[in-house]
Amino acid sequence: MATCDLKLCMGCMSPLDANGKCSHCGYQANMPHNPDHLAPGTLLSDRYLAGRALGTDGEGVLYIGFDTQRNEKVWIKEFMPGRLAQRNHADGSVRPKDKCELSFKSIQSDFEDLYRQLIKISNSGKLIPVKDVFRANQTVYGVMGIVGAVTLREYLLTKGGELGWAQARPLILQLCTAVDRLHTHQLIHGGISLDTVLVDQQDNLLLGGCSVMTLRCNGGEITPQLFEGYTSPEQYDNCGWITPSSDVYSVAAVLYRMLSGTQPPESSSRHISDNLVAVGDLDTSVPAYVSAAISRAMELDPKKRTGDINLFSAELLDDPNSNTAVFGGVLEEAKETDRSPQPQKGSKKWPILLVACVCLVGIGVALVQILPNSGGPSSSREQVSVPDPFYVPSFIGMYVDTVVTNQDNLSKFSFSIREEFSDQYPSGVIMDQSPPQGVKMIHKGTVILTVSKGTLEAKMPNLVGSTLEFAMQTLSNMKINYQVIEVEDDDTYTPGIVGKTSIPAGDTLNRETDTVEVYIGKLPQSSSSSSSSSSSNSSSTGKGTRPAPSSEPDFMWGGLVERDPNAD
Image 1 (cartoon, rainbow, N blue to C red):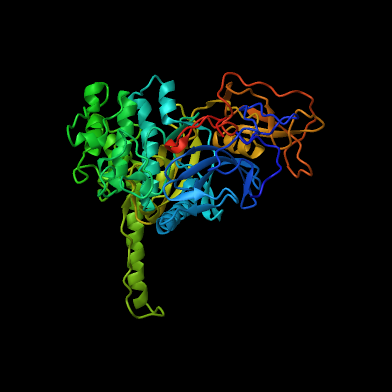
Image 2 (cartoon, rainbow, N blue to C red):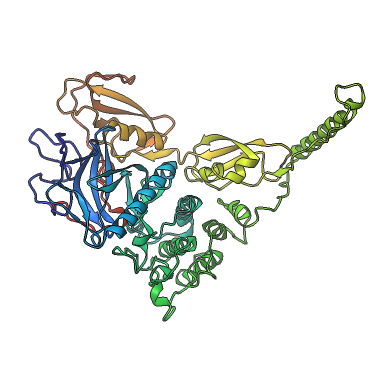
């Protein structure tokens, strides 16, 4: 097996100190590892360095890894189902067990196809980014980007175990967006739970744990991974058929847990005695229409259950007492796509412009009809085709990536995006639009969407120890201004690794006026256009934050079996 000589900790992929020790996680290189896993330090595809195994499931093994080309930490998922395959300890290859060759190759092909599809769709947000898939050791590996986030289970613990509807609403709508992205590409998740949903420090949600469908149902050829309280009943049935409504059930169950603080009963047991109590009965502060939407989405019979994730999200917003909810506008798109909305009250200039446009179109049609009879080059009368009009719907309250990737929207409108900070709307949510709802467009026109950049104030993330690329990406995603400063002739700074930031981790900053200085060791033959500065200052210490997300991921996404860092 190929190895790599990079001086990195195989427990967390952070740089080792001068004595060859890791100050981040305490992992020691001489610790024994499970011989059924890759040896820490194995180089895959001449590019990816595999570290310790983080956990296993019926599909395979998840490793901490490092991309030597992009100089960044990654997760590496190895297809190695324990029921079907075993490790050749001589060369590290994965071989199917006797009489398991066909099943192994079939599910391996599904695994590879899944990751190739995820590469195309996951980088647009709301899903754990999948960066690469390749074959090595006679099996398949998927490479994922590491995100700075915690599981929804851990997030809820920091919030007292449950959330109010106002807090849960933006999170669950982001989850609906992620699931819709999968369903649009004919993918079903099948494993949505508190352990496969992640939340970052800005309350942005990401969905992980995508797997082959065989892992998500009983009676398959690999050991199933089901989530008590969140898995749909048909997934427990050996003859069950998994559909998009199975994911709707799981999303509703997650929301049930978020609002009530109570895990829903296992769906397979509900067939015997259905003891599911409406969430509104557990917490009377939950709106009745939200409670009813959850109950419909958690019907045991898939035929009676809410079958579409967009319809479920629309029902969650169907507040009978308000037409101006923060996330209004989704319901009309999901439930009444053919309805033409009426102009809003108080809008006076648009009807005048509309009359003027109609008059101009009428004059144009008349001229086309007259000109051929007045000596023009053609004596035949041509019929002028006027496009069908479109009424502008309300996009306010919707996530912008949902709007601008919707093919029906793109066939009718062009979009121009502008961003502003807001204390009312979460990042990525549309706050305003021009023209407003109800305006009639004869031709395909441009709708200007004003999108929230999140609150003006932000907490400085802990970037010390991360790669420069990760730090730049994190600050860019958070809309924080930054300047990179390269430090020469200082052994306390590692080339390309963040050694200090001018604003300590955990401090509050202003996204418009503050600029974060990011100090790194100078890279050899650097062509960076960033300003350089010589400094002998030691790295500053962040205040009261969890470890840098890129350096020490402190969670296991996908519900994998958690392992002691020293167990390998």
